[in-house]
Image 1 (cartoon, rainbow, N blue to C red):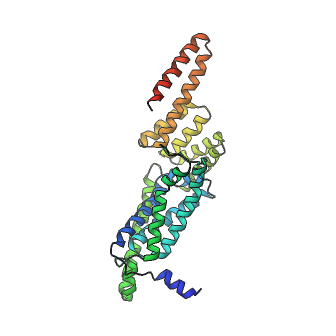
Image 2 (spheres, helix red, strand yellow):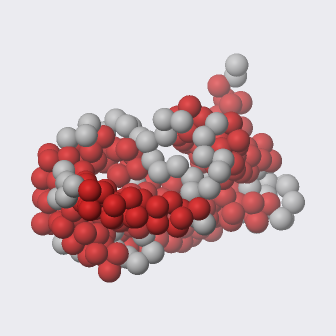
Image 3 (cartoon, rainbow, N blue to C red):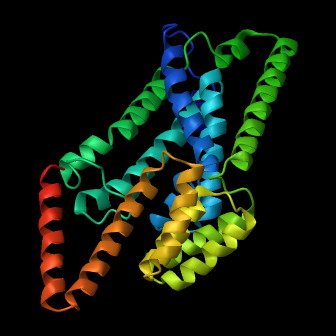
Length: 312
């Protein structure tokens, strides 16, 4: 293999493709860009997700992947360094599929399952893989066909040194603006990992949850909450840890605060529903301790619950 040819192929992609290639770049780069930002804005999309999946060193790994997506997404949109970025994204998507879809197929997925069937097995994998598959295919297209004529790669190939430098400066300024926006969004959001201490304690709490050590998990989440009192993600996981210890009053208090900060919070809504079921079961046990009269009321509750669930 001629190393020089490979090098030239990597850094000098063809730019004579159709102008419509820019639409593919904007779609692929845009998705990676905002998904990278979301990993900073919402802990459950970044550090929390990586922790649940059992990925080593979840805090630095999540932040590294987020920056790759942000910077790479901008570069794809600009059509700059197209082939190296496309290769990086293809590798990332393959790793994402291997780390999530195998467990989904086997039914051991550590994250919440899809809300509606198919939830496990091959059809569930094919349904949930659609975004990953699309990103791999579009990145592969850009890797082979290049960024098209409306791209920085195309301009830099034909412009003079001075004009080329101007392009690079403009791109660098745009990159810094977007990176600054991402950091500001992450710091301002209630769900963000605003400080390394918050991210570290949240990750350790998630690890303890995975080990079913809910008392230790609650301690880590309390430390994170002390650093960032208005984080819905931390409040949600602290409530979860308290609920698993049977401390339902504390759990409902934290869930209420989390949902007040982020009303559209599906994971918290799910956990609240589970907390209410847990509370109902606790009351049923209490009723059954009252003897025959309590048993009659308990049976009425069970009957009513069965009737309600028929319509779900």
